[in-house]
Image 1 (cartoon, helix red, strand yellow):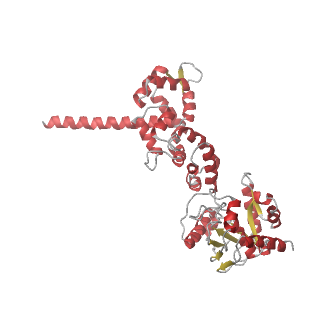
Image 2 (cartoon, rainbow, N blue to C red):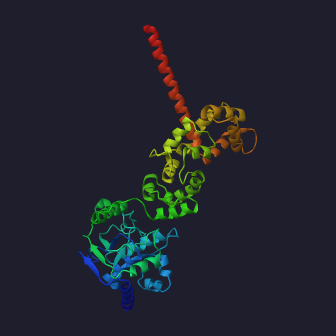
Image 3 (cartoon, helix red, strand yellow):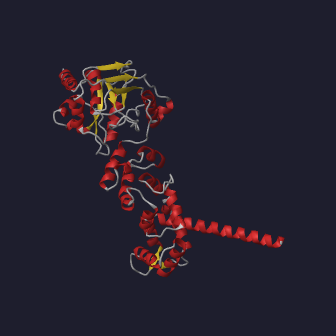
Length: 422
């Protein structure tokens, strides 16, 4: 009984904002056919109107925890008994996933569950990565597409705030929303085993229906953009296609977030790292070896390194520095003893990386933390852990020297053969 006045109040709110009539296209599946409806694109808080159109006793939803704490509206939200998700608690998603699976089982008395798999609002120019919560149970889902006739409803990360969006929408005499039910999507056995694949394929169905492209950006990219701004970087620096980096490199959000302060300290060229910034960070002059390592980071050959390239480079290019064997070999190549003296380091860095004596001495003082006048392997490794690019630089230098020797030998052989012929 409590749901009817809740429905009446909610529908009246949308009516005074101009949503006088909502059209429905296609056939809504029953709960037995599809226990979950996945709705996209998620562009505004107005999207919740779908619950009032479909009927509150026959629908349930997933909502962020903050919605249940909002003044007045929070009471209405709590009456619906949604599955709450907190973006601040690490175990919240796991608990929500379990509750979703419990509610959608065939023997459950809960009504059909409505979910917005994007997990955040976008500007509906593309479909971002779908979260796996709706697809973990491995049950059929019904894709649902929302069509608005106005852009005033759009409430993305950057754009009009809530009150501004409401005011602009109310300024329209009439706002139209069409809810389109697509055919029920039944997962294959492979999709049941792989929720990420299931989510990706359902996103493809909705994208084709809307004629929109897809992208591997996700809500985590929004959080990284916010962090980028805090560190004085352009907000777009944080848009790294988080989902793709997670899948290909196995990175967690915390791993990428930890890289931002370091990147911000290096990137002095309008939010990007130039070759000069890279050299300054490593306290080295620009040399062929440095240019070679820089090119490994600069994957698109633009002449600068963006944050996404920096994250990938930190995992792949600088990875040899995490290998004890690689470090030991680099240390052995540049010293004959169990330590490196200041004189030896100056000679090494001058020959290999074109460092001046003053630059090499400053580097020596940073590595020689106990001021003993010599660098041990443990000190060498500790510094390489802080700046793993050095180990890669040494390896690149050795490869360049090897190529140089091979070329000289080839030229020498050519000269000898020519002399024999003469």
